[in-house]
Amino acid sequence: MIIIWSPLSVIQFKEIENYLKINFGSNSASEFSFKLLKAIHLIAQNPYLGKKIYDEVRALVIVKQITMHYRISTHIKILTLWDNRQMPID
Image (cartoon, rainbow, N blue to C red; front, side, top):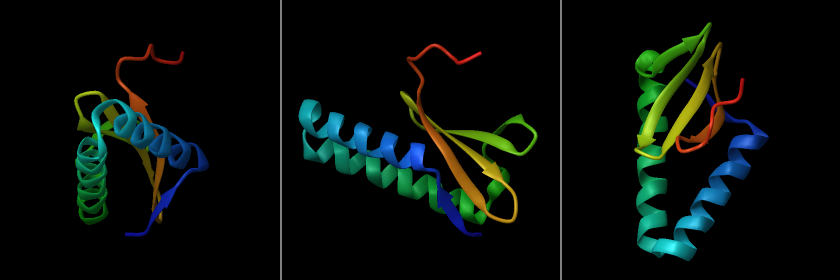
């Protein structure tokens, strides 16, 4: 299935990657990127892998601190990379 990144998710990915590089080094940033790409590959094979949030929106934990939210239609759209330490938006 085709994967499409929302503009917000691209920004969030770059911010997370930069934060990890600055605070924990390149290896941590690379490890996160690898885990994210592995998760994207898994949902491309099995779109219903993540926990259903509402309608066709699902959530999949990438690492303890980050959850990927995505929508399923004729393609998979990555909506956000949510920092689980944040307060949810009502």
